[in-house]
Image (cartoon, rainbow, N blue to C red):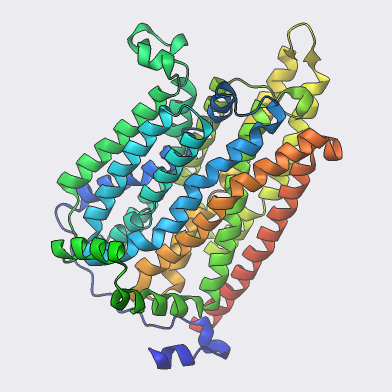
Length: 489
């Protein structure tokens, strides 16, 4: 390994450090389809739990009287990045523990814990309890990299192309279901009689949490009965790990983890290093868009928003997820076959500056067509606004394609023997931005609106400039990728 690390100069550093030692093609096991189906189901749980609160989080905070000033709600809702920050801190511990006790028990623990944390969020009586429950949900979601890692371990050259293309679709599926559940079930008072129970009237945001927790629990049941363990499981190792953690045994604390070598090895590959930087930037841009878009739609028109209802926000986000799933299934495979993956990645990232700059135009339309009698824009202007929302969301979802292209680029430019670690490391950088992206974006939005900075549109200029930085990082990755292709040819 030391010799590998030392030969990382000139053209040598552009090629993978370890040769692909993947065995010959083997016939997939008979249970492969069932395991793939369960992994796809588990894939949707993270975006489902992350996005189901978006349609109603601002109203929830208002109901709890977190702030009397509507323009400052964004400062509080941005603190919901506690989910992503806790997830970031939990990724490595979960991954390390799974190497000792197996993937399956860690996945089951995470999904069941996520169910309990989601239920607790629905019962939250104050902002502090909301924060704690979301942080717990993030901790139990820290095993997210284990799901694609298992997929890597059960696939081979005969089925991985189909498996990964299908697997990537389920993230936007979760993004569809989450806002739909959150937007439609967050006010049981206007729902049919079967939902009108006292518990839902006292806790109007518990019902969407209950539904999502039930989906999580079903995933745990499916994983328990169908998913097979892919590594040797030592049950006693689980208890030894817990004992070491609780007693802080010095010999185990001083032992250097093998993952550190893998991390140094991977980051010594320039193309992979630039891919991680670009993925980190992309993650910030996308989570900032999701947070700001909800605030923008929820805020009053005079404060730079669109004054949409919770249900309208939920349906708009669901449309966004549907557009992503549709484009990934029918359009992206065609483009991947015709264009270089790295260049297609860059083209998608390049859409984001225009997306952020287009959003203030919707508010300008709303102001121009505002009817003082109804407190809303006229029907003609609302039609133009909804057309604009649909167009912006459709374009924005093309900007989410790089998440799927990432998986192909990681497989191409990473040693096959450490593919799981490469996915985990990339996920770490993605979660790093998810941790501080929402609070940063929502804070900029709140400051812009409250101070009327640049007519209240400072947030759009800031995020557009950030997206341009993301373009530069993506361009750098394309440059390294092209050089690798030239060396390999």
